[in-house]
Image (cartoon, rainbow, N blue to C red; front, side, top):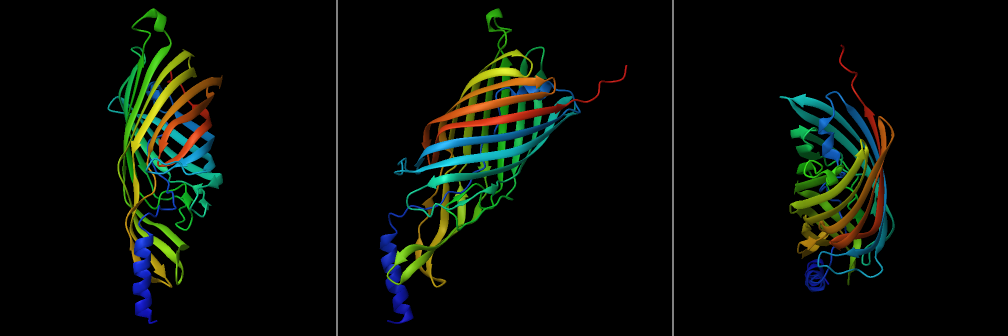
Length: 345
């Protein structure tokens, strides 16, 4: 059999065998934010305030749901994450402006996704810079309204030979977010200390590069073929969180919230199978994951000192499509305030 006839035979065989193929990969997605209940109330902090925050979290997933809504049998994972966040408060034209930066890290353990190599690339996820401009920050009226823009930089540790990545495949992402907080005590004395928090955002994703390169991933009659995709596209993601929060004293609160996320479908394109570096079959675009879930939150915070607080977020996914469904998760947040010196009398 000549080389040309071998390639033609392999191409015909693979074209028929890949019709029902599902992409064995999960790329990271930069969407939404880690905004807690009451965070936008910080718009009343004085200019010159500096805040250092440290987050650490764990979630157990008891299922992986593909983009068609099918739960893969015996799929599970444990997700670990931690990141450092720094924030500086200033003023522009009499309005509070907050400049922030975050450096996140994450990984997964005890991973099982049927049909994949179950290999995980953890480490540095995409760092993010964000700026918040407060249109309203009125502590007396108990009303805050701010607009935040998040810039995710494609500097994470991505490995296209691994089935699961915590970083994106070299994607820029811009997230535009609105945060609104309203104190309810002014409407009735019985509502004193109660607040309503709303956080809504839209994530706009750039294209990813070389998301998949799996050697020996496709069996052929001539030996294992390498599966390659050159590009990843992702639709816009949308996320809304709403909290009812009780704050008996400064830096102390408990809140119940609901979060809904949708959109963000990732599709690997420009796919092919190669044998010995020679393309032998084209593969149609394949969906990888989505930012589609319904999640409940229980959050609380208490101060250990005037300038130090500990908060926690306990969450559960009620529904999920296109990713790991978190059965239970918890995150701890440590917050250290550095207030500016009082003005001279």
